[in-house]
Length: 102
Image (cartoon, rainbow, N blue to C red; front, side):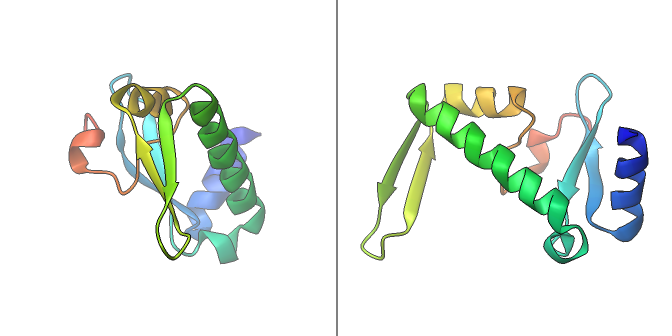
């Protein structure tokens, strides 16, 4: 079932393949059109990112401050960056070097 969803999201352009990790697993990224093409996927991803950030904050691996416009500035420790990758996320904007076999 999951493979069918993955194929569907690829076919409509909601996600794209951006590389392959050390274990040979494909790394996907959401396209800019994802929010409009697959709002349910976008919402699930946003929830996952929010939950991940809260977990990292509770572990003391990120620091959140606010600028004069009350925009959040998130600083991630090196250990936090490793945790993010373990949780299935890559720090964005990502660099080509973040994708091992790209």
